[in-house]
View 1: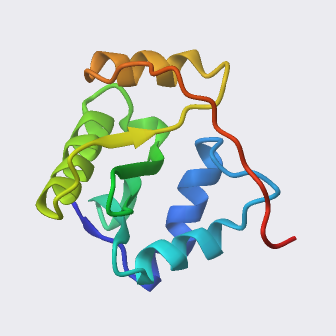
View 2: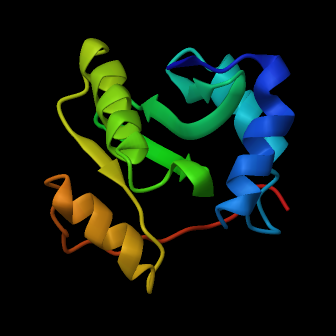
Length: 135
């Protein structure tokens, strides 16, 4: 596992797309570059045979750590790759002083919720509100 480089962009976006994580209103290439070039964020990649098979975008806002875009290639699921990627993300955040890590799961994604629950994550009573600052 390592931090992504610019040359990983296309393969990482392909993985995010195949995992169903991309949305038409979010430009994944822009998300990738923002996280990769930010001083308090990065995209972690798990590499097998020179290709990304797992990813997690991590960031620390000074109050809590966040994880986005956790993805595992279909041929590497159910063998611990997601668990290892989350451990790596938590370690990255811990070394930067994040006291807590949070993530969002889309409503209805019961498989993801079960995965995070098995890792010890708790459901919290929070509503997420959003407003676009740029069209």
